[in-house]
Length: 338
Image (cartoon, rainbow, N blue to C red; front, side, top):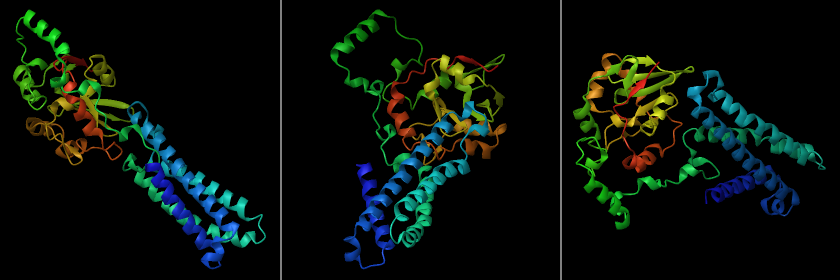
């Protein structure tokens, strides 16, 4: 449906450009083969603009996802993105106009008239390229991110069939009562709203470290800049830890580390539920907002909580669709920083 909509707009735009390039009245101009050739060429050029710019946007987005592991000069800055998105289109546009118009009898005058439309096309392409940086919904072809399909693991446990429930019940009767209040089996429908307070009650809210290892529960942000990675702890302290993300993945706690911008991951164990995000800003637990500014300036903290412009608008909904199925075992594991 989206592709058809784009094609319809492109066709109308091509017809308008072809009408504007004619010197005769509309009826006479439409009856000429020149009008239809110009319209088809303009429509093809406009679709080429859309597809090429969307391709460049995809390359830029893929580069930003790997930005943490790459030096800053390997990324796609704004100027490079716009140059690659617009310059090939402009050259191709100019070549097609020359190829189609110059062989005609009065080709030079027709070439000049169509050439006058090139600045308009470039201006529209520039604004389209800028608009794509605000979100993927303006892409001419649909992407998998347009479909918000909760993963199978996010299905409500209350919908489990009786056959699936019997083994779990038998296991529960055979095993002794669980003493660990942090186990997911002890949570009701309030999970994960009450998760943070249960973990604080069980493990404490003070920063705990063993040599150069820190609890996962005490890591608030992962920050990357110029090929280096840092952890920002609950007391606001920032420590160098280039391999921390690999070790978090090894401990299987990485689903809780959500990338919210090009430079920041946030520990979703430490945010406020159910109000996870306020517009485009994440919300941490109140005690963290009170203690972190002691060593991490409030303005930097507010900047870290912003959801980046290049992130998908479905970032938070997709996480919330699967959060009730995430296991938080390992929240008190110590992650090496060296």
